[in-house]
Image 1 (tube, helix red, strand yellow):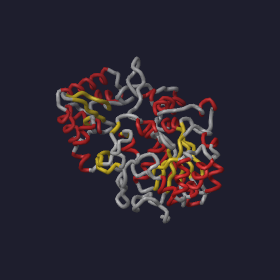
Image 2: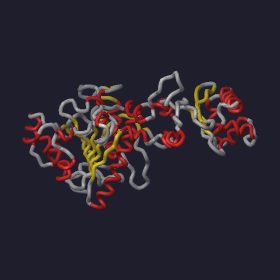
Image 3: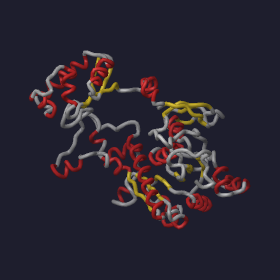
Image 4: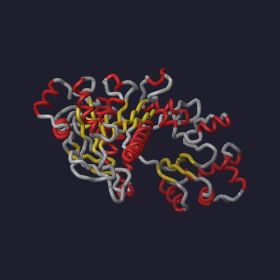
Length: 414
């Protein structure tokens, strides 16, 4: 690790990785934050003044310690461990400062419509001149190339779900409307694609000395998760429809109403026989074997009615216990209060406390995932205000004097 690394203590598998993050809202910045939880040094660039006004303020907000505007719970959860600076990339001085930061980075992640950074004089070729080993990951709704009518369109999570094909399959059949997957599934899936592809690019750069740019379209990240959907269409002209929580082509895999709430049950392949045993049926009987795959047949409808009746006569705890004793996958549908008190979440220390700089106190939320045996991740700092780390980054890393930093602030470059 170079001596100018800002992270106060080495930890995690990414402790020698330096990332610049200049996107807003969810997908791309969350990818960078996940890396920071694994030890990477992440510098998050925001606009001077307002910062990432959307994700800092959208949704439920909590009061800050110094009386500044309340901060969103999403920001508190998803901007830990990050060094937040302000920088106006539209100004020549801002461009020059960015290039200095890029010269020492391993990865630059950004999210914008194609051509945005070209307007700032920060097209890929220019950035590669100061750092040929850099991995540049461009995240956008529709990609950097393609039909020009699409690539300039704006996109949000729900748009990615719609255009990527997920939303057509999510929800209950007509006349019910298609349903988005909550809370922000398209953005979080895109974030995971962003992080793994950036690290794949970094692996190549470190072995060859050659950086490259990555073009990640949100709609394609979503589309890639649709399993055999497109093979079914190209081979047999089958269009997957919405089926609610029920699986297509076999049963059971669905939600079921118990006496006091809802559970999910799934039984694939040989597990189906174990489920039949639980509810008092002979799983080897050709009738029930037929019911497993012929959902809308008389046998299939009868099986579903028997299972639903069996579940409805019992409490959630009784159903979950009986099914799991026979190794049939089954769970209560968990809410926030249930997860907070659940013994397994507690045993795995999934909910942890850390100090948030803006709240001025400890806050409890979700911990680091996954758990590494040798190089575990950790939370060493909570979220901070816009420009909180300007002096640290511009002073320590770039060597600017206090007077120079103040002049940049007066000129609203930072």
